[in-house]
Length: 170
Image 1 (cartoon, rainbow, N blue to C red):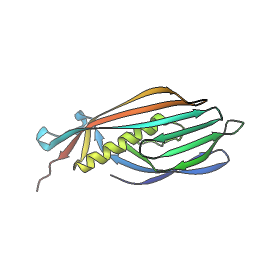
Image 2 (image 1 turned 45 degrees about the vertical axis):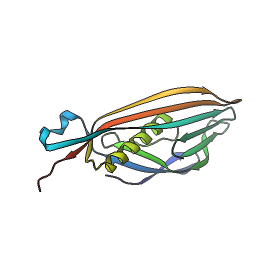
Image 3 (image 1 turned 180 degrees about the vertical axis):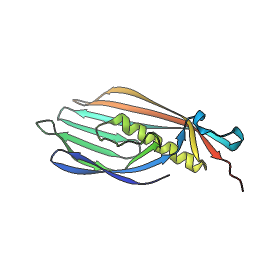
Image 4 (image 1 turned 90 degrees about the vertical axis):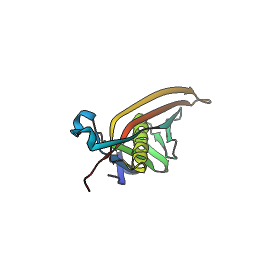
């Protein structure tokens, strides 16, 4: 199932709309398939990756951006309440059907994983797949020194799975 979902994050004082395009695909463990081996074909194993960069500045602002053009910059007021100052692009989020969750603007690891899953779903559908089996996801974290008062952290996620096609009687 592929769809588009617009979610909103309610921040103190007012609601902000974060544009999110959501993709999902059926995912089951190999043992849950309950199919005989001759009931499906494994097309191939696919692997995708995504990067999310988080820049922290001393002026109480955080900039989160992914490698497909989505960026959100959040500034915090004197009390620590988040205020969205700028947002551009569309966050392309994907989920396995048993793993669907809301995306929070302040969770860069979730953004990196959802972006990788979106790419995994897109590649599986391009290959003509009906489902994914044995999905594996790994997120690594790397801190990079920033310029001046900035601190940068990069979340790198790799997701892989086997794409299957279920045989049908014709």
